[in-house]
Image (cartoon, rainbow, N blue to C red; front, side, top):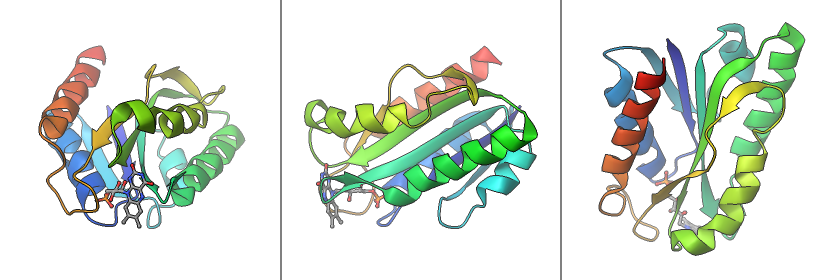
Length: 156
Ligand SMILES: Cc1cc2nc3c(=O)[nH]c(=O)nc-3n(C[C@H](O)[C@H](O)[C@H](O)COP(=O)(O)O)c2cc1C
């Protein structure tokens, strides 16, 4: 199983969440992680991954434009190849409570919908952080992402 996990980290929380999932999956999968500003979506598409998980952050009441652009470009490349990614998911880091962040989360989740993914995790994944602080995120967040990654492993 080939997995790509993208993030748009500034302070390190998104990267730590991506690494936590990578560690949970790496014994059974070939897992790559990277920043959306550094990883070319064309390269990821051409590698025909089984799983693609794209992270973003809420900053100044907006979801990272770089993550949304990455998804848009990735979908264009996938369509050129006539390929469908078996499984996709999105996660968001945010300081506001999940209930409020849901407004951005639901909109961000919609950006991966469409014919490009065969299966999409039904909800956006929440990575709540402690304000504008470096890692670790809030208690229980890394454990949540570890369990989530293990659940994907069991699906393949
Ligand atoms: C300039 C700035 C603005 C922010 N605005 C928001 C916001 O509007 N809502 C929110 O939930 N979190 C906000 N945050 C917190 C970020 O969501 C959090 O720092 C980020 O997701 C952590 O991810 P990172 O460590 O990977 O950069 C803001 C953070 C910064 C630095």
